[in-house]
Amino acid sequence: MQSSPAKAFPAPKGGASLMLAFRPQRNVLIVGSNTLAASRAFSAIEADAAVVVLAQGGLASACEEIQWRAANAQLSFVDIDTLPSPSADSTADRDVHSFAAYLDSIGGASLVCVTDTILGVDSLARRSRTSAEQIYRICRERNIPVNITDMPEFCDFTFASTHRFVDPSTEEKTPLQVAVVTNGQGCRLSGRIRRDIVSKLPRDAGAAVAKVGQLRRLAKGPEDDPGSVAEPTWNEEDRASTPNRPVPQRSAAETETELESARRRMKWVAQISEYWSYARLAKMMEGDMRQVLHGDGLGPQTNDADVPSGRGSDSQVDSMHSLSVPARVPSPSSPGRILLVGSGPGHPGLLTAATHNALTKHADLVLSDKLVPEAVLALIPRSVEVRIARKFPGNADGAQQEMMEAAVEAAKRGLTVVRLKQGDPTVYGRAGEEVLYFRSHGFESVIVPGVSSALAGPIFAGIPVTQRGAAESFIICTGVGRKGKQVKLPGYDRSRTLVILMGVARLGQVLETLQTEQITGAEDTPGSRRDGPAYPAHTPIAIIERASMPDQRVTSSTLAHIAAALESAGEQRPPGMIVVGWSILSLWKNGDITVLDDDAEREDEARIERWLGGERWRIVEGFDGGWEGL
Image (tube, rainbow, N blue to C red; front, side, top):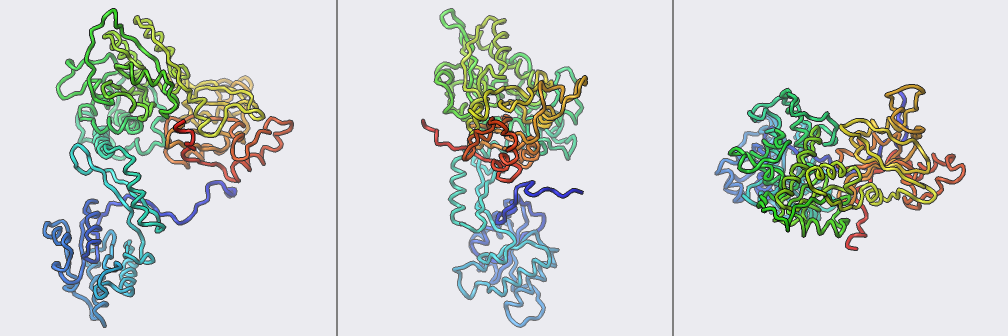
């Protein structure tokens, strides 16, 4: 087997921790009965662990919380002085031997926490370093992870600074937890960082997690029997690196098997988790969940009066604000109208004044594409109904029809409808189809242009689509054709930048089309789907995800290595775009605008080496937000 070349993957740098969400399967043993022991016990109890507190002096000497939890059967208390022990030379030795004997008698433990070594306690009660080291060795011999307070050299794990969210409407705790670890570099600071993180998340984020958990359970089993699971190992939401993995369009006339239905529903759960607002997720009711998972409402809109008891209407299911819009009486002086509006790449600061006015002053109903971020939707007054398009995998055409019909129905009632699209409505936004559809139903829609993601997205990644000396022109194309068909991509031109929208989920297919040599006379080959010469394997490429948003990520590499780079980055962050061409290098650090010089190709290997610093790829999180507020 050929050995891997140097720097094929990013070099690891030690000093981190392996972060795990741990669910103890056996007892959690806590040595000591002070307030820290009580805190450790409480965390373990919330993780559904069976907790045993081992301490000297009996329960009466334990802190008040330990006594209370023992009295309420939330934990077991064992006085270590009462345990049998082999003969030993000292009380400390008897204590350690008693611990070892007890540990063996119960068949081990998931983990052990020693808290009676904490600094600041009475010197007579505090466990000695020698005793702590003996306990550490006993646990290591039995492969039991151990944490000994204030003695990091005797710790297999540390505790994170954690926060568990509550549902603001019920004050009940939710499954959502966040944890911060500084790996011993600033334990006090970790608490501050945790508080900052928590303060920036919506208060209903925990409730949203709880509702998505309920949605997942419904999705895994038949819709009329949520307790039944079609395939216990199936978990499409977690398995797929992108929630936009291509699937065939779903037809209402087709009959799905239960396994196919479960898979389709789990894909839709992933979509909902990715795109719906926290507020909308937190307010889901079971009727809403069943309706969404079943795919109801793909045809004409349903009036509230026609909805069976226990089922939410379309407006209830898809409205971000969960409000019904009162029906207006159409009048000649106030006819309904439809605005096709572009929201830009994502950041609300990039909205045009016209778009902002449409959303905040004129809209009675907003029909939004799923890619429009929550930060933009949050600008819409709460009195305005907001519906999110259910363009889930396999359902794009049905959801498109649903939104167009909803717009016409509302306009007929005299409402001003804003059809909100990401970027610019006419740049792969299906605006033309909607203009013609609305016209055929008696409404001449107004197109309000938006800042195109195809132009603004690369800028946020530090990439100009044109640059003198690097790129003289650019082409914007899509990575997928109508009804999922493959499209023809342009051939290689050194002086041109290629921007591909909606292609990240089909990256393998795109790379194959760009690089495969054409075979004369052959049809239906990757090379035949390209109009021009193949791209060299060392051509620069960048994948920009969530452009202009705080969680923007830019993965830069060459065509030869971008697939591995994207895989190494973890789960994808839609929406994403692909930029191919030499302009990617032009503004990086000292820049490179010599790409179009005579004989510049001879320097390409060195050019790529300088750009990537000898690595195969580079991943950059976030962006320089210095422009904000301008």
